[in-house]
Structure formats: structure tokens, C-alpha cells
Length: 301
Image (cartoon, rainbow, N blue to C red):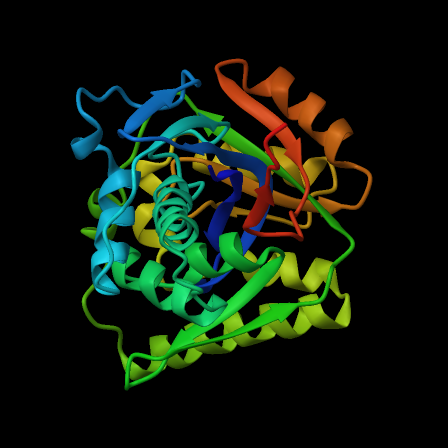
């Protein structure tokens, strides 16, 4: 009888101008405790997870079934206990983590032997873009591009001396809603400038010039100017974080969470300061998770 755990980190996409391309994994996790049995059973052990009435309706089950069918396999029965520290519809990659959980669940139960590239492809098919999926799968900061033949290329950036602080409001924002505000086209001049800002941000991160990287993060032209009015306290959070030494503060994914990139070792101090300014938020210092999706096989006693 198989027993195993699947652990997948939260993620934050875009990093400002890295729209639908740059993402990073964060040390909050979605965890599945799986035991094979004759029938299917799913339990939620977190207040952050939505209610459901039948396992057939559960997103993770649906993705697992879809993945198994993709390989002409049938899912065996199992009990899945789901725990999560990732809030829904907050811009922290909850849907990407759940999609990867379903993919990996099928992979383990059906012995599919999926490669990392296949998991990335399947997750991108579900999500529509690879940034959250790639960072949650591989860990760290990952830069992706979908080529004209729909192949996803990616590079994982080496570990950087950065901490992050996230500001999670008690409101949801669906990605679809935030995307509707974006223009369908940019002028050549705007696109050139926006692309240059993104390139310089990544080059600055890789060279260790975090002050310039933060400046470029806050200079995005692809999405933040159009979404700013949807994000509670957008301008005040950025201004206050800058006062306490944050390099740059941007929208996490589509929002409404915001995220600051801060000097290594200063995350806790900055989060305490910002908590006092944002009493109705969950403000927390996090680390960039370097491990990505993890499987822990359990040997029954």
C-alpha cells in the first residue's frame, strides 16, 4: 500500500516587469498526505481551503484524473488529506500549486514517470502561463518563456541574498478580473521600454545590484499601472516599505497581495514595522524556497 506526501510551495509571479515570465517560490506550502485504499476520500485540514461536497468536484482530483487519462491510465483509490498555508485568490500561486499537486498525485499513483519538463508542460497547459508553475516546481527564482511552438524554456536563477515580505489583505482578487484591465496591445515604443526595464531588472538581480533591481521592479509598464487601482493601499505600502530599506515592492501575481524584496536578514524587522502600519493585513516575512515540489515516500510500519 503506497503512502507518500507531496509538498509544493506558494509562488509569486511577475516581480514587476517580468510579466508572465518571472516567478519565485515562497516558503508557504500546500501538502498532500496520500494513502492508497479501495475508495477515494479527500479531507481538508486547513481553514484556507474551500469547501466541497464530493471528491469528483475537487480541483486536485480533477487534474489528477485528467493527467492519468492523458497517459491512458485510471486512478486507483486513495485517501488524500490536504493541508495548506497558501490563501486562495491572493496572488500567491494557489491554483498553480494545486495543479501541480494533481499532476504529481497522478504521477505517483499511476507510476507515470513524468519528467520535470512534462510536469511543467502540463501545469502550463492548465494555468495558461508558466511563471507560477515553474517556480513552484523547481524552487527559487525561475525565468520562463513560451516559444512559438508552445515549448516552455526556463532558467533557474542562482540563490540571491534576499528576503521577502508579503502583505496579504483580507480580500480576494481573481486573476481573470485583473487581466481584464490590461491593454490588448502596446505601441512599439512602450513595448521596447517595458522590455528594457524587465531585462535590466534581471541583469541587476544577477549582478547583485539590488537597489537598481528594485527600482526597475517599480518601473513596470506591462501590468502594474493598469492594476494599481484594484490593489488596496498600493501606493502607501510601496512608500512605507521604501522608508524601511526595501529594495522594491510590487504586486504579487495579479494581486491583491503585495511583496517587498528586502535585504537578507531584515525581513522580520521590516515585517514588524509594516504590521504596525497595516493592522488589517497579514504581514509576514518569508524566504525564497529553493526546493520546489517535494515527494516524501513513507514506508508503512
